[in-house]
Image (tube, rainbow over all chains, first blue to last red; front, side, top):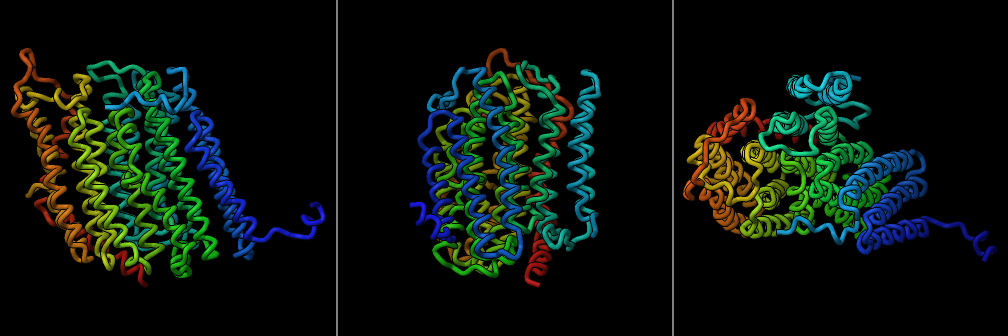
Length: 110
Length: 481
């Protein structure tokens, strides 16, 4: 196993597969998790897979410039802001309702 | 570099900080000054956007100011200005019905101004990085605004749903943009448009981005969140969401289609036609059975989004002028309706459609303004909604989608039915026995009056459409250069 890993350097296909897998795991988490924090974590996974995409394409498609890496840095910063906002809302809601189970978020059905 | 081009954005951001900072300094009873600061800043930015030279670029072409961008900015600022006026009474505790857990005007205006700055940068951005960051700047504060009433479970629930759906949408957009970057090797929108050719990867990327924007713009099948978020959010925020968030999605779509994918525009027309048809039909049909007026307006807004995206269908770029004009009409008309809803809920705390009965007996002028605005949303001549719809439908017809024009015409008839439900409550149903005329604040009454007049004027005076058309032509000339 170790020899195989040492002899094979991952190319862009492997990296893209990794990012697509991360994206799919994240999407699965969003669709199946019942706890809002779990959903937020899954969304973060999706955002990070997209950031990984930018870095991979930067390395393999356009290595002359660093546009992709800069984008990834911005994505990380924005994702952090998104988590802060999301968690703040969840905490405020938890104080009021005592739950952040998304299956019970149905007070507004007509 | 000519930083005057960025002046409107800088003014808005400076005002945001000024409002936030002043909130710390002023005493509780002089909180009214905060709204004045916000309104003054937005008015100054509006003037700056009008005065800024057209056709310039900053940061190596990553931030541009052209005719289309100027129109969008003016519309954003108009929506922001009106929203501040509509929010004032509720935030300063002058509503007759006490609403708990709302207030903090300083933070509220700061967040509102940040979303404005994000939207204004969005329409000027010509690079994936700026595009994404300004889109997030335009949406992140909206999550907080939707959850503004801290001790109201419905507001918190609206915030929760909005933040999850919004984050999911931005993940989709970002993944799609990443693939486009990989295909083109550049983050500049124009360079991507030149480099990409239709391929499976390109269509995957385009579908991901379109799905993400569909969430923001409430295109069916990505509309599910809208009704709950609109109902749960404080009413002024709902008003802002219904126009500003929609305008943001439209601006993003504009960037996507016209600044990036202009060479491939033809290929999109069938898909856009199907999306427009399903969106307007579903929005209209579901609106019929709603009983809460905010939920009702959510579905009405969904169907309006269906009309708006018809502007992207033209074989050329003619649709831009029609779309911008309809956006102007939509902002004015929808905010007129929401101004009446906010006034009524401030005075009585009521939000159900049946509870509007007899409003024409007690407050005839308010009922008249609301009726004019509702008729304009339905598209009855000579009101502005009719003219706007006429231009959009002729774009769809020019694109060869005659079936879409037929669907849209049928939808307009359906929408007339449900808008008339409210008019019927106001005019035909008798008022309650002890109903007395409700008072109205001066600012709110002035805004409602001005908007109702504008709804009529926009339909009669062709100057606005001519201006929109001239600016769109200017932008086209610059884009094709």
